[in-house]
Image 1 (cartoon, rainbow, N blue to C red):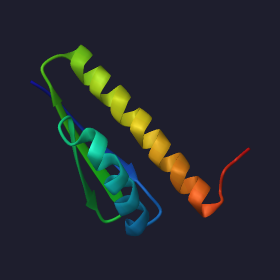
Image 2 (image 1 turned 180 degrees about the horizontal axis):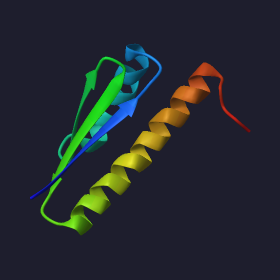
Image 3 (image 1 turned 90 degrees about the horizontal axis):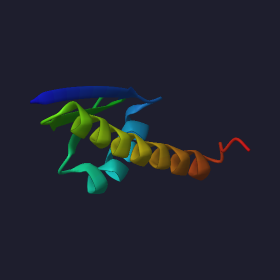
Image 4 (image 1 turned 135 degrees about the vertical axis):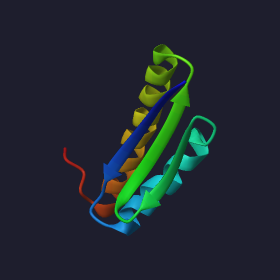
Length: 79
């Protein structure tokens, strides 16, 4: 079994909570997430390296979308 933990730091706890909530629907069965202060902690398990890479690739794609949506809502989009 391969395990991976990511700690993603945000400006404050509220931002971390918004990101974590937006990730939950897509990743609950593959990646478990929770908030610790201003960090989103993501924990994944897989049977092989290739499965872990696939899981993390999907998770990071969802994370990227969640962060871009947050930037758009705050009006911080870089064009």
